[in-house]
Amino acid sequence: MTLPNEILLGEVTAILREGREAVIIPTGNSMLPFIRGGRDRVVLHARPEVAVGDIVLVRIGEKYILHRVIAVSGDALTLMGDGNLAGTEHCTVADVLGTVTEIIRPSGRRIQPGSGRFWRRLKPVRRYILGIYRRLIR
Image (cartoon, rainbow, N blue to C red; front, side, top):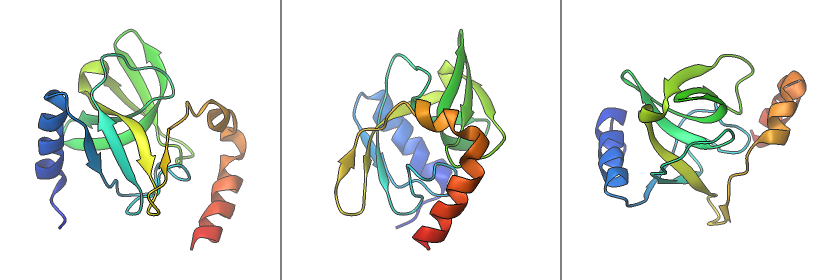
């Protein structure tokens, strides 16, 4: 069953605030190649601290975004999807609903998300790597 983001992620937010974990299937390709929208599932937990490299679910206005933290300055966060070549989002720590603690592949294999440090350094050549990756997964 597919629910509108407002309903589904509103419930996810309530679950995370209770200290429980939530598992969702993200949509879109902004986190390729590490999270494949519509295929992988992610396990979310509320965490008191947010660090560069964390993959977080945030609410900015009426939008919910699952992206990686690329910069922290006090309470201000800058986010960018791993599959994005440009464009960032800005929010505060208070906007963070949960942090991804596991990625679950369709096979059931569970992966701990890394910090993405190496991937962030590849930003100048990401276009080519993602182009090849997208052609391979078709």
